[in-house]
Length: 379
Image (tube, rainbow, N blue to C red; front, side):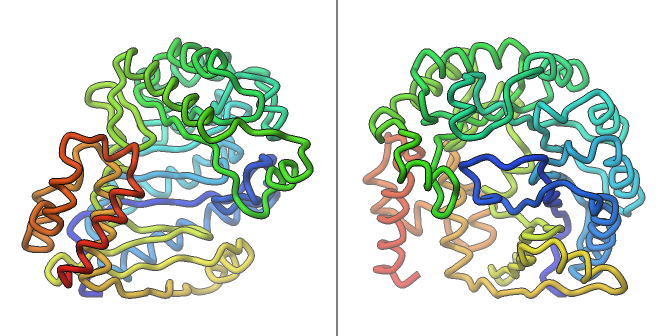
């Protein structure tokens, strides 16, 4: 295709989990129970990646990310995929992240990742508060701190921890304790999410039956802000809506999403976006959320992903939507090169109205005003 970029990123969706949490509809990010299809998936997804590199005439892969699901349930078997990726021309990522959960982030898995070229682990802590974990069917903390110590040993100052606020039975003291206990292992990066209840999830049903009661919106916001303050006080920069990093430790892969740079997506439910910088358009594709379909598609031959076209207006809006997730806003150089103008020139009234305000805390309101201005200006 003629929309190729000279450099790209790679996202691999590993769809297996050992168990499902109540706040996921099996799951917000598509997943299935781990079973004997893991090995076939690892070989199929590599075949998919090779196919896409040729299909999109992609250049050097500069960041890579394996998410899920729970990639750590692959254990040492993840070596197959990591070793295979090394054979790809142009696969030399500056940052290579793999997600893990504490219960499966054992020494075998972490050793395979380190030896396989992974530079960064993202581990799902969520909370240490046992009543909150039980309320949403998260695995018990068990060896949580032992595994955090192990991750910090294998990836010192090179791992990210996910924390969550707004959980049932969660207090401000519990949130602050979660931050303190997590930071004791010196993560380079922390993601702080506020729980959202998705339609059709077991948690939604529990709330309807009043088996579980969540904090009201004001309290949930206050809990998140308490966690935010604790992280900032500890020296972590709040650089994106839900993300905090020590100096020089921002997630390079996610920054490429937020700057709307190109990436390939492999695996069931994975999505990719290939940017045509010359014409300020893009091709977007998403695989079905169906593991069996995916495995059958790459059993004997390749199945090309179905692409939709993003025209200039759609790509402009996505570039603003993603870019303003970050404190610094859209990358001005990339934006001007792509669209021939700066964000300030596209939405001058909205920018002026929000100057010196924290856009990240009120992003939806800001974007609503920005898009309305684009419509008025015919952009």
